[in-house]
Image (cartoon, rainbow, N blue to C red; front, side):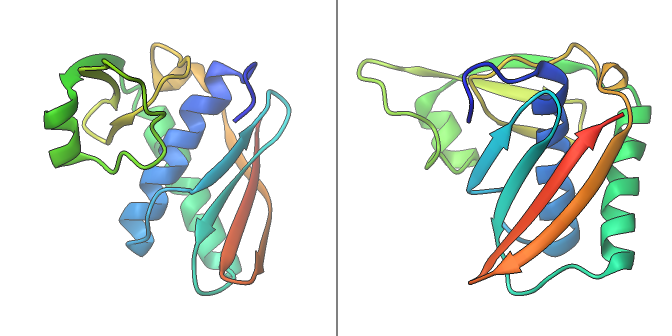
Length: 145
């Protein structure tokens, strides 16, 4: 992930990840490139999404944005986080006993070190621009309007 990513776009990425997990039962993205103008997420997946699935996914994210969920930072022990979350993408830091968990209302929670907006309404409108599938990887590109 780029070091200068946009809090709105990064918060939208969390919503997209939860929408993918909820709708398809897959894992969160294994790779993301988050920029202010456009972003992408890569998922281990078995096919390209249909036009209807893309539309439903986009609608799900926008519905969650409209709910105006508060975005809260919780600190939990590393031990507690390991029981609840996949920590593969969390950088290993020696002596780190607590992890930062980003909670988006009751919709999503995951470990994260990046900046976020205070509320989902600050994100704006989410638009999936393109999708692609190659070698077991589904790529979703998106922007905010």
